[in-house]
Image 1 (cartoon, one colour):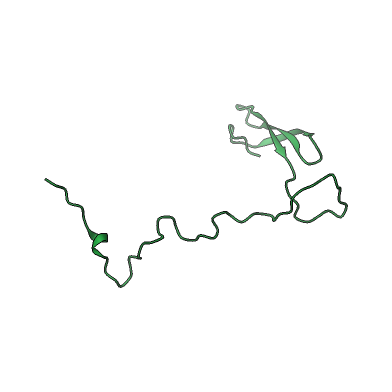
Image 2 (image 1 turned 90 degrees about the horizontal axis):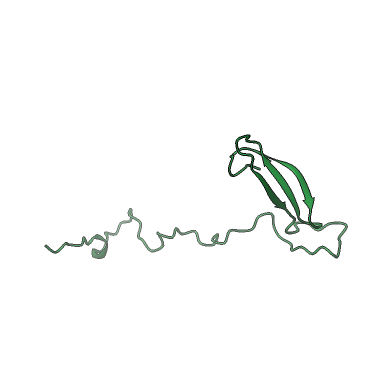
Length: 104
């Protein structure tokens, strides 16, 4: 893990098991000028393949390795949904080429 302050590698010094699933890990920045110490949490969040020795006390949701992005169904850019391409054979209409005039 990289230290967000020293921008160098942080080494895990020790860990503390909170429960069967999550544990806290203490990281120390290797940049001698930084000295930042942080705690990260490592945990199990979902099942990809069930265990051959299940435990009824552990209940995790099933899921895939990576979930599909929320906007994956819409492939049109946000600023390009109704515009006619510039290289089409039709000339632009008057509204597209109108230049606003300034009143003197």
